[in-house]
Length: 339
Length: 227
Ligand SMILES: Nc1ncnc2c1ncn2[C@@H]1O[C@H](COP(=O)(O)OP(=O)(O)OP(=O)(O)O)[C@@H](O)[C@H]1O
Ligand SMILES: [Mg+2]
Image (cartoon, rainbow over all chains, first blue to last red; front, side):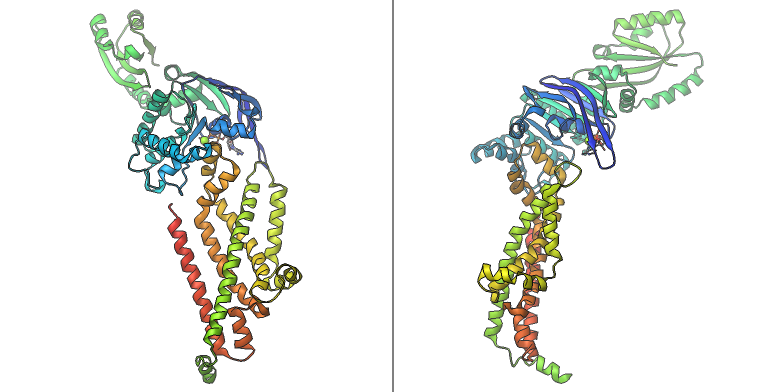
């Protein structure tokens, strides 16, 4: 659906050249929710703005559907943008228009008749759950409601791709959850492709199928979300994953546990999907007759799988340890010995 | 001293129909010039705004040229502008006297001033909103009347209020050199014939007009602002 081929973007300001995006290549499939995560200044916004031609690449090519964005005429690009719509961190609604008028704006631009506009806007108001608020002005809405208007507005021309630039970053956790669920629902019902950028790993975890990690203009890692969490390879990814899980606490605990049980071995059991539901601890106790001290545990849900880890302390011989690792691998549980 | 005050408040020379006539002329000059200043100023403001936001390091020739013309006319003192424009006014309006003789100078004196206010109003629009409109595939013309003007309207109204009040002052200056209106009444009758009561009445009427413009302008700006 979307092919980003060796794309670079250099901004030339009065004093310097800033290379915001460096040689990025990505392929995003139809119907996928694809996340792009990175710290501030990593070039995420620039990359997503290249997708709808708000910025043009210095080099490289972007292909969406059958069109190469850089090769489109101005008129064709305007037409294309009706099918590649965008929502924003700060909603960017027109304060001078009511909810309904905001939602109808892309339809006006597309040249629909008034009746059709009204009809479509009404459908969308129901879709995003804003019935009763359609004649309010944006200033009379909460942040979450404003973003719903933003989403309805972006969906009005039945786009194929929805670009989300930090769409939940200005919202509280509960509202974020609501908006993310709405995006998931939209993907299910409308089958569109969603590209979203964020600096919150939680957002990636909750709704993305795959994600790219950006640092300093480059994509440093691309993988299915589960893989990113279980097996982060790049340092930046590890940091994001750890921040999401709050691993630092656990590390501190391990230090103090080691002092209390100097002879114990500390194991980190990582499990995904079915493993997350199997009764592994009681299995270990019964089968190997071990005394197990549970230190901490954690289960997180991605949009399709759960994954998690468990820290345990056991008194165990090396021989037995290998047997345990063997047994657990049958259950799809990965064992690491914490140092 | 007491004598002078007594004379001023005697109102013995005040002819009501002359005051009405002068008020009417001032209102005509102010309102017609305000309408033109609004239209020309918004157009110039849009040119300034649109030509300065194009990508690139400098603003380009369109911005440079428009900005130069606007600055030039804003720099000329109004009284000199009237004199400077006389030959042009004569050709255009057929006269340099009266309400219509003053009109070109009033418009040319106020439109560039308002153009700057309009440019400022447009610059105040949330960049994100413009970007959102562009992400919908909007054309420049639609951008102007669907986004730029509605989103800057309260500031445009406040700006035209200031401009209209400035124009009341300008009509008074123009009145001194033959344009008619309350300024003319105050000078030609009140001053040259030494009838200070007439000057006082003209002043009071001007103050009422200025306050009325301010109140109307403020309440309109407030009513249309849904932020
Ligand atoms: N129009 C521009 N002109 C010059 N430099 C720019 C422009 N837009 C972005 N940049 C620069 O490009 C780099 C990447 O910016 P970008 O906005 O893409 O980052 P980001 O990952 O979206 O960050 P954030 O999370 O803060 O939004 C930054 O160094 C920024 O200063
Ligand atoms: Mg950004």
